[in-house]
Image: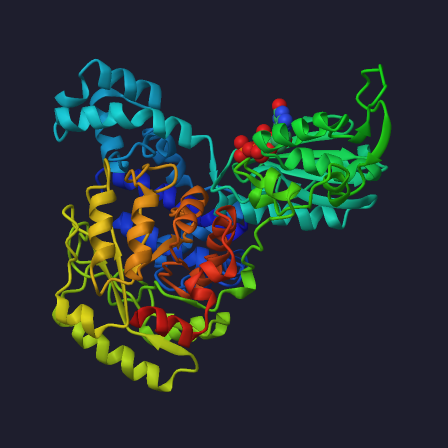
Length: 578
Ligand code: DGT
Ligand code: CA
Ligand code: CA
Ligand code: ZN
């Protein structure tokens, strides 16, 4: 965790605990400060060394908070936070992972029933005690029971968007360690799965012990779980990181093995057995006529490189995102693998927000940010009012008409193409929450489900996709990774309708969503739909998250031609006008 992230996390914890105590307004101030500190481009620690006034220069960071930031960097803790923790000894992260349970509920449940953990929460719900607490009803209690298993499971996995930066940091650290000849990330992180159990790092070296020692000395390490001669596990910033060191001539085989997935490896192993070969983490071996069951027995055919391993089995090497046993083994044998979309082929973003709704920046700033990021075009698609828009986030139609003028005037001076747009809400009945005359006037209409995200959503999404002015179905299932599973969607049926109506299905690249998922993308593409990969950016810093969407699409076998925003602006216009 960078030190900016570290202090931001403390301030967020502060906010949660204040919320739990029923304190008003202050929690929002702490959250806002945390967000700005996270996004701050420089080292806040450096500002803190210059004193509270320097920290106070960061937007949204007032006197009370800046002095706490200084205190944290000087002493390693914040006394007031420690008091709050002692006062409310709850596992906030686990409890708030239950959908519908926020910090305020946690505070009330602790006050009334002394609930501190998920197990205690479950026991209280089963005993019918939750509904006796003021502010909680039988419905909330049932909701807790329904969601607790999901929360428990979710709690153990880290979002790709959080784990990936760690993986890349450990990768670049290992690159400079003496004796390291080869290195790579493995496991689910290399496959870009939406959530990550642990980070796997593989090193090829003749000096395993020294490499293990350097790894446990990595400055980000919070705790060493175990350290042996050729492997070690540590905790770093809340994520478990596993290191394995192998000799360079076995690096490719080990990388193939530790990249997984398990199901992919089983299919590869079966392929080997059919050909009288053996594949394992040490290499590919010809075992015809060999009795010995030693792991390295037989003639070694490959092992140093991953390409060599697949080649020895009569397969083409394939990108890790495909390795989920969804037909890639057969495709690699037939030399019929998809030619996957690449990160640098994305040319624009069709789903972004500004301060007109819940974004943090002006239209002009978002457009400039997109240009700076390297995009050729951007659509501004602020939230319309409607189901799911609470707290004044949604913009009423009459104001969207005004915004339209602003976007057009920014577009005149912009270096890139700017599309006018909106993110409308899809009601439970499939109705679109914006008037038709406005929809018809806008270049890009993203329609997304934001409320009633239980049960089967296919009918309502199909109705939205059939609307003549809807161009994109945004985050189709409405899932929030680790928090709520979202709608059940028959993607094939939706994709059929979408293809017939010239509507694109989104891969929302926000690390909290990744919606559609990889398997959803694969179904959508097979049914003929066009997909679009959007960041749903709420600030220019979010544009960089597009890569999580690109790799999710790659997990769904997306090729360049399947992706709307891999086209140039004219190509996009043509699709929108269909
Ligand atoms: P995760 O960490 O839960 O997000 O998922 P992975 O895929 O990173 O799994 P992990 O860290 O347990 O193991 C890394 C890779 O090692 C896994 O993708 C495939 C390989 N592997 C681990 N255990 C087995 C096994 O029992 N059989 C086979 N065939 N492969 C295994
Ligand atoms: Ca792993
Ligand atoms: Ca692992
Ligand atoms: Zn959005």
